[in-house]
Amino acid sequence: MNLIPFKHLNSIPLEFDVIVENVFFKGTLVHKKGKIAELNGTITGSISMPCDLCAENIERVLNEELFFYLSDGIISDNEDELDIVEITTPMIDMEELLASEIELIKSDYFCCSLCEGKTVEQEF
Ligand SMILES: [Zn+2]
Image 1: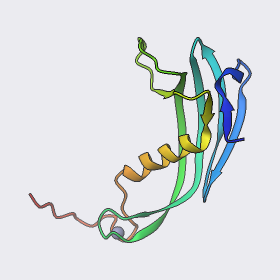
Image 2 (image 1 turned 135 degrees about the vertical axis):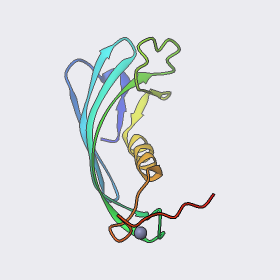
Image 3 (image 1 turned 90 degrees about the vertical axis):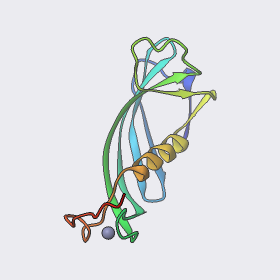
Image 4 (image 1 turned 135 degrees about the horizontal axis):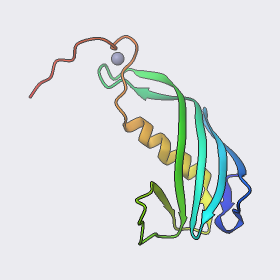
């Protein structure tokens, strides 16, 4: 089930799981209040990404805990300054959510086991 209608969420946690290539995303979605829902999940599996130092493509093993809020549409008054992902479609596209999380992970600093511990020569 990769598309979840926002309106169907209620106080009973709804389990989801999504697989994109070698990445597994599972967890629960629960309605909190008003337009806000809460997501609790884990991302496991692996992705292939280049080492930041030697640019070699390395299989990176993932084990990420995720917790954030979703809003049904744009939230203009985010008073509590919550970490909110605004969903602007009637359906929550879990694959798209996972894809954006993977992009975040890919933008993180990452170096392979060979480069780990090597002193990085900084050029300015
Ligand atoms: Zn490397």
